[in-house]
Image 1 (cartoon, rainbow, N blue to C red):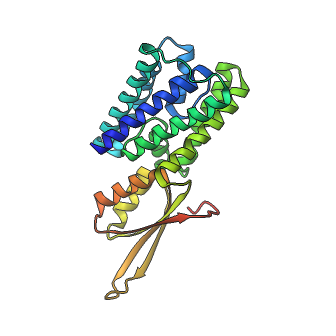
Image 2: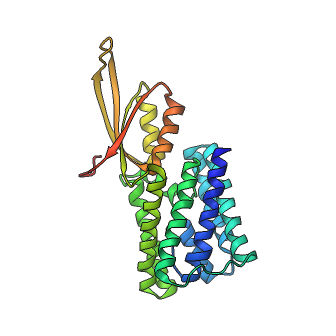
Length: 273
C-alpha cells in the first residue's frame, strides 16, 4: 500500500509538471516523457497514449531482464502517469501555471523530479530510458547513467528540430538538471552518490544482478573475518542514490544474510571499472 501511494503521488506530480509547466512553454524533459511531448506536437495522439505506445514494448522486454514483478509495477506506473496526464490536459484542460520560461523551467523540473523521486521510492520505474539504459549497460562497457545521458541529449537535439528554437532546448537542459537534483534530495536528503560495501556468501549471484539491474561495475575483495578468522568476500561499488533501493532489493532476494555498509561518496576520480 505504501508503494502504491508513492506511485500515485509520483504520477500526480509528473502530470502537473508536464501539463501546467512544460507543455505550454515548449520545454522538454528527459526520457520517454520528453519524447512523448515532442511527438505530441507533430502527431494527433495524446501525450498519455504516446507514453503507453513507447513504453509498453520496452516494459515487456524488461520482463526477461528484471522479472515479472518489476514489469507489472512499471506497467501500472506508466498507465497511471498516462491517464493522469491526459485527464489533466484533455479533460480538465488545465491552463499554464505560468508563461514565464524561467519559472516554467524551474517548477516544471521540480514537479518532474518529485514525481520520479516518489516513483523510485515506490520501488517502481517510469520505464523507457531507464530500461533501455540498464539493458545496454549489462551488454556493453557503458554505464547506465551514460546511456541515459545520451538518450536525453538525443531528445534535446530533436527538440531543436521540432520547435526550431535553440533557446528552449537550453531551458530544457536546465529543467532536466533541476529534476535530477530534486530526485537526489528526495532519495538521500542531499545530492550524492553512495559507496556500498557488501559482505556476502553469494558473490556470483549478487554480482550478476548488480551488473544486470544496476548497470554498475565494482571490485571484489577477499579478506578474513575477525571472528574465527573465516574467509570473507566483499563487493565494493559506487551507486547512484536512485539505485540504492534496487540494490537493497537485490540483496534481500539473493542473500538476506549479507552485511551492507552504505556511506557517502564525497569525491570520485576515474571510472573505477
